[in-house]
Length: 424
Image (tube, rainbow, N blue to C red; front, side, top):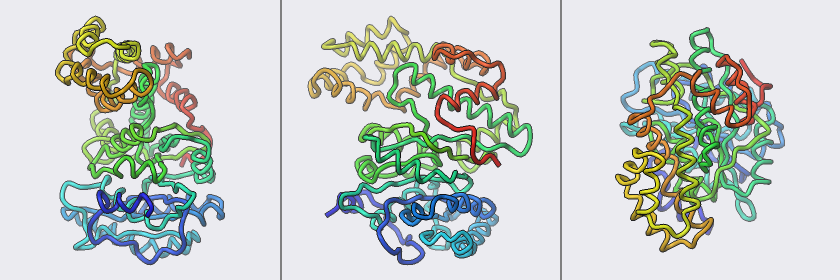
């Protein structure tokens, strides 16, 4: 019995959702694409996938999850109907033999209330599992979005990465496409710079969570997916929590060799994320998105090093020492119950790598972000990028260009997102 069977019984998707028709053959992996009112965009995404080598396309299942909740507006419902009608045409037009879809939009098949992209991804990933090739293989699960374009080297780069990597998950390089107008371009530049400077700050601090969590640019092995408990059902932030869990159980590596190109458009479908941030900035001005002060990552790094060098110190001693870094850090740790947690970790994990792995399982990406929020609110209010990005780049050994667009381009290069490829 393959390891997916107990997972599907324990945590797999339940409901009436089905793949459109029987899937032929067993596949080396699947690309899952949730689609909500994407009739105008999905064709271009599929066309970009079709430019990948035919021999690789033949090995991958492509699975679109057309989805909506029951409270969706009539425009979105009509758009989804158009998408479902177009998918057979796109399958023929782009010669995508293994393109399939799941109807999660028709009456009786709609997503439950307060559900969204997390559940849509989970439906596709879980329903794909029985159609993958196991035996000596550990198939690949790739997440894409219906408004995102990929390059002709996409499937090759993902396949090659996992052939070489020992880690179970990967963040795929990304760069947002050019916006339709200057206001939108300023907004997407600022938002992507915020994402990249945050990851740079985590890297400088020595956090194991210094990787991007972009839903349209992530992949994992089936074994890692199962070990992590599968995709979560969150309405937003599903990518952040998913890769956090993958990191805890199987590790995440940032891959190279290709770049995906998400849409820069504004959207208010979810409470936070790219579309929401861009929409708010276009409406209210880019100045509404402020950055963390660089000192926060210095304090974070001092804390992580203190723990790593903590040896057999008690939790109370480490917590008290944290107060010398920042009294707000000590207060945060006290409220989180760090002292007792650390003493328990010490009892169950020998010193060294195993203990630090356990610590980072507790002090994870979410708790790291919460600490930065606490420090921001208590003592270090957010600042404009002019005050935030240059000091981080200097600490990383790089001169900072003055313009936001140039700072972003530098960080894109440093973080593996190629300047060539699809930019439309």
